[in-house]
Length: 231
Image 1 (spheres, one colour):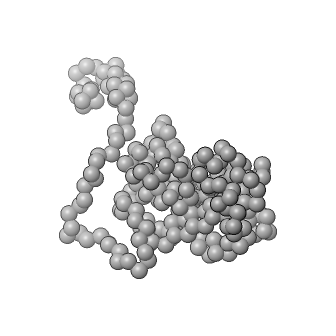
Image 2: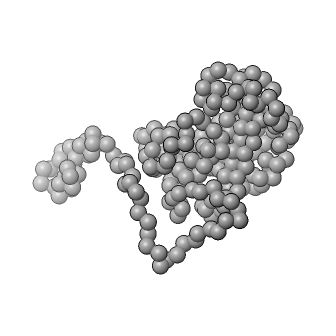
Image 3: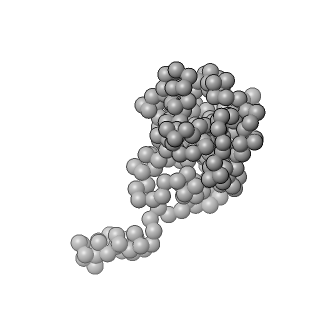
C-alpha cells in the first residue's frame, strides 16, 4: 500500500485571492513504512510575498525569484504522486491550492477521495483537543526542535510521523534515509524499544475529576469504579 504524505507552503490562505504555492514537500510510505524517497521543490509564485506569509515560513520573494514555475515541475510532481493515497494535515487547504495550479495548466484535479486527512483522524481519536500540527506532535512526543518556521518537506515528515502514531504504525521514528541504505525490518527476537518519555495523558485532571464525580453521583460512593476513577 503506497501512500504519499504531502505538504505545501503558499503566499497566503486562498488561491481565489491570487495566492500561489511556493514549496511542495512529499514523503513516500509503503505499508506504513517510510521508503526514504522524498520530493521537494521551491516555486516562483509570479507575485510578491506578503509579509504575514513570510513570517510563517521565512521564505522571501528574492529567494524564489530564480526558482521554477509550477508548469516546469508538474510532470515530475504527478509522477511522484502516482495513484497513491495522499496523507495531508488539513487536506482541503493543500488540495485547493494544488488543484488551482493544475487548473491553470488545463490538467485534471487531484480527487479529494484520494486524501487522508490527519486532522479528521485526530478528531475521531482525540475529540476535544487542539488539532494544529504542533499541538498534535507535542501530544505524541514527536521532536519539533527543527521547526522554528514552517517548511513543506519538514512538515510532511512531521505529518508522516503523526499519521503513523494515529494509525498505530510500526515505525515510530521516521528517518528519511537514502533509498540504497539498509532498511531495518521487524525482528521478533529483538526486545521492544520503549519510549524515552511516556506519552502525555489524554485526559486532564479536570476531566478525570468530572468523570469521578459522575460515577459517584450515578453509582454511589461505594462503587468500585469510583475508586479507580479517583486514582
